Length: 420
Image 1 (cartoon, one colour):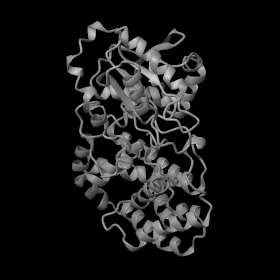
Image 2 (image 1 turned 90 degrees about the vertical axis):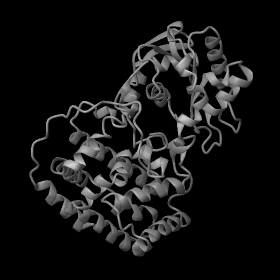
Image 3 (image 1 turned 30 degrees about the vertical axis):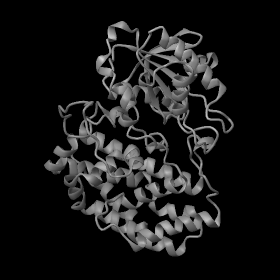
Image 4 (image 1 turned 180 degrees about the vertical axis):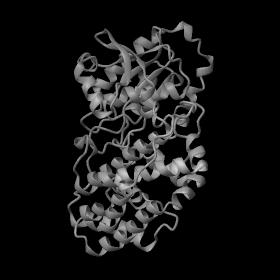
């Protein structure tokens, strides 16, 4: 561990040339095809790392970088050491965490590769802005997007390692905490077994983040936290409804969609009474032809470990009990908070070519919408996401608000690993 830190501190001391001017690259491309690693949880949380891992041009350039490859070699040495000495789960994770100086040093090294390797630069430019996955950094030059996103994903890796070996640092501990007692001997042995596998079968083509990324993914799997991948790909989950888009005459509708905010039950029921009420309100609005589609939003949230997705059950209720056609209902089965209800609905609209000059009509309970329209909700959005997922939000009546979606909603958040 000490060797790795000294190596990176030396890299920090070196001088890096001034940033290149921003490239005239295309912005978000709705037709962009995402690169896949075979692990959808990884791809949604750590898309930059997936790109570096899966794109041969990017991977080869990083393998040739001495600083970054020394980081990887030192991580492998640390894996060999900790499997013999650790007595608790947190001990296994500690050497694979990235501290702030390491994150900065690696960011500098990545920026240097970008500036000095034309093939690396050209390949990365095909992904950073067109994907939309890093939309919060849209105004930055690509080499700065690379640096900032690496920092964000490194912190996301640290988040998972701390959360699921220490059960600390969770943004929403009541619903996102570990499935098991992370301090128990049984859990410690399970984490040890994961690390022993790395020791016995090291990845010969690994990069500077490979051991940490693998541990993060295995810890999520160990704790049954595959929520981000459930019902993916969304284009297939919503396929029948999305097929109706081309026939919509948008000038006949006031809104692009009616968004229903989920409310999970506190027992084992598939759907709560509150959710039924919200669905009935949405159905009444839909029958008045205010919008051609209803978006139901809510994931596997309440109670802890539930087998029911709010959105999936809301769609079933709307179709079976409220006379709303299934082909008019879009599901967001991932959102775990009000902030991400709006964000994820925006993603559906933006990625599928809904008109951006039409507002969304959002319905929920009266008390819930008072909160959404308040400065308190603004503060939560800024704290948790760093931006507001709406503009020109206005309360229409007790049971509905309207807003325009914003493109920053496309930005994937590795600090919310169950729904990035």
